[in-house]
Structure formats: C-alpha cells, structure tokens
Image (tube, rainbow, N blue to C red; front, side, top):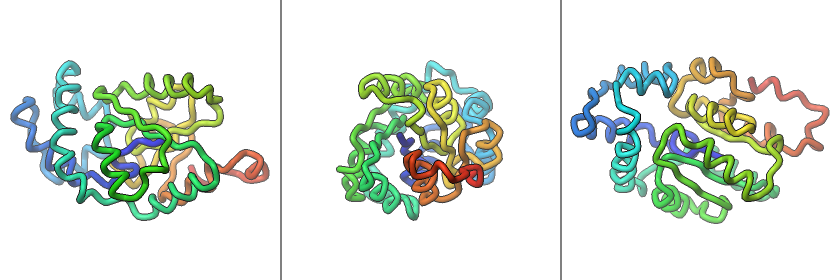
Length: 217
C-alpha cells in the first residue's frame, strides 16, 4: 500500500504554494522556502504543533487543500522511476493500493494522466492526517491479508506511525517531504532512497530467503 503525495506524485512545490495561500483563511503563518526546508526535519505532529493549527480545523483544511490541488493535477509530475516500478510490481502479481489524505478524485485523475489507472486495485482517502491506520486496518479485514505480507510505503513520519498502528511493515522513502534523518528517527522497518529499491525489498519471501535486506536501512 502506498501514500500518494511525496511518495508517488512529486507534489511538494504545489503543496508549498497552496499551503501558503490558505494560511490567512485557516489562521496559521505563511512559510518561506527556507522555513519549508527546515520543516522537513520535523515529525508530522511537531509541524502541526509549531503551526498552532487546531486538530479540529485540520479536516476542513485538508478538504480545502484537496479542492485547490485538483486544479493542478494535470501538471503534477511523477517521481523518476516510480511509474516503471509500479508497473513491474503489478506485472509480477503484487496487490497494490493507495491510502492517502488527498482526495480519491485527485488521485484517480493523476493515475489516468500517468496511464496507471489499472495498476491499483483500491484507492481510499481520509481527511484526517492521522487517520490512515483506520483505513489500512479496514483494507486488511476486507481482503483477509496477512499483516506480515503487507508494507505501507510513505514519505512522512505519520506514514510510519500509521503502518505501526496497523500492524504492518513501514517502508519510508527519502525522495518526498520528510528528511532521511527525521524518518530514521521514527525507526521504520526499511528506509529507501529510490523507487526501484522497492522491487528487491518487497519481492516474495521465497525469492529472498538467502538475501539480507538490511542494506536498505
């Protein structure tokens, strides 16, 4: 299972501009580019605390953000190597899904633009940034998946938290929002630096019994 923003789609620039545009309306300070870079070193919860955004306001902010985001979806780039990696995972028979705080409408529009509509078996969305674990658990129950056969791939510390709460393994990626140091501090099961690493890391156990995945950490 994958996060969307910062993991599959390179939406960091768009997110930066939209977040600043909505600052006055939702009562938090705008962020300079240098400050934005510093935020990458903080955990998701630390960022919310520093911005002094009420947890009750966040779902409304997310919905408004997604509406603004949809206007730029056609220009949104995919991370280099991600499209090829997703197609390879699908071809070898892996089940792929997306769990995101972005809207399902935005995600499906992006997948269609990238000719990846048939790759993902399921796309689910939550307006609560820390509500992903509930959705992951629901998917596990729906399909009867074994938790040790699942990974959640994301670029933020809250993605690691969601995987841990769901009882599945967390793969943190360093090409998205949070820095490698911030991600490593949350102790994900794996930390990777480029999309093709997923192909070796998530290969069936029978194909990797003699390997050692620790070089990805």
